[in-house]
Image (cartoon, rainbow, N blue to C red; front, side):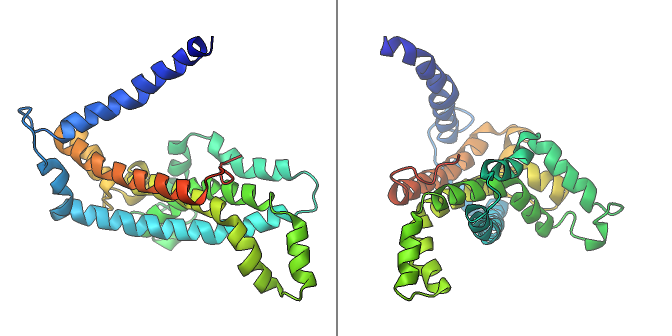
Length: 260
């Protein structure tokens, strides 16, 4: 019976994950004639590809750090909230995620454009605008895992630390932050990876002037029709995903940082 019930999941896994990955691996490791090659993968270290990857890493790192700086205090505020309906507060932060991703990014495009309400900032079509879009779109993915670990912390541990004479900063550094590491690792991963591989945000808020590695891959598949090179670059991006999964496995073995 269990095997029968698991059949739809197995079919979905094959059709939606394993087969597409196998196709990408095939194209990435062959040229247009079907001959084996690693040139598509090695292309990541040349010219515009290396520049795009470097910029992607830089902007993704900046967005992740900003999200962490914003999310951790916010998680503490939600944890200590006396409103009694914390679920509603979390719902407010999840609500924007119900709106289409492209529409949310387009809203920022309208706000930041020259004649928009925030046009005076002059950041449209710049890396700053792209980072802003990343932070806005992916901040909930940082808040929820951190909040999820914070609410699981036994308050008696914090009270014991205060009873032993620890200051607020000491409690934060030696009690709260160490116990929140699983949520932080999960949040960092869930923000960094999509930020690194995005192309929609940089297309819309960068105005074609900010080329990230995601844009390069997208252009290889659509404009250049070079599936081999696009797949080879995609395989490099999969390495970052595998590394992120390894970090989660190491620091969040119990799954405490999983989103609510």
